[in-house]
Image 1 (cartoon, rainbow, N blue to C red):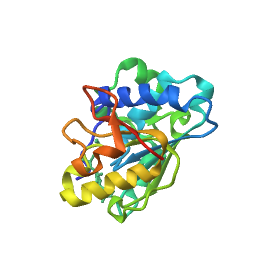
Image 2 (cartoon, rainbow, N blue to C red):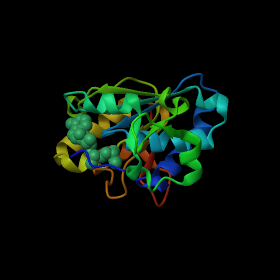
Image 3 (tube, rainbow, N blue to C red):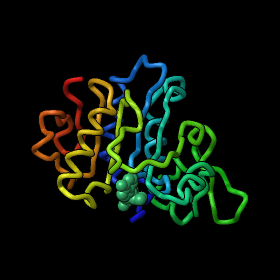
Image 4 (cartoon, rainbow, N blue to C red):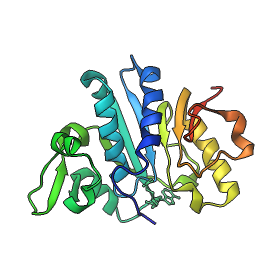
Length: 202
Ligand SMILES: C[S@@+](CC[C@H](N)C(=O)[O-])C[C@H]1O[C@@H](n2cnc3c(N)ncnc32)[C@H](O)[C@@H]1O
């Protein structure tokens, strides 16, 4: 189900970004993966948080890969255009709306400004392929997706995220998604009140 909304579980995204920024500082490319991104509401929420917390030059090094297993590429079209109905943006604070959105050509819609859109790239990806999107990610966000999987699939997807992360990189899930026992040795929880983990080992 592709249900999502802007500013959903902002505290977990903020915790993850706060952990990642000092870790990623000095990198010329900061790879972030939003896995199971739906229509990009979470991706652009994350992009706003990153833009607010990082300096302008470091933010230009961010590559935010948004993936979903949507097969007709509707998600890719929406995310590339970055155009959303204004009634979906009601939870977004006014200062962020003014800073990161502009009127879209169609009435009642707003468009994400190029400053954020240029950092985001949509790709088709099926998590159950168990193939990492790539190596060397500083942060992987996967929220409200794994609950739909079987317990054994969840374990394998966590192993795949471990392979996708750079040594010491971060992973964030929704609060109800606890780490399965089988992969507990692969991650260390770093935020007591959020499911934000640091990769252990290489
Ligand atoms: C409830 S939405 C969550 C969206 C967003 N992460 C959030 O928390 O608001 C779940 C998303 O997971 C995607 N999804 C489900 N199974 C998937 C799979 N095997 N591979 C990739 N994405 C999947 C769905 O298409 C949907 O967009």
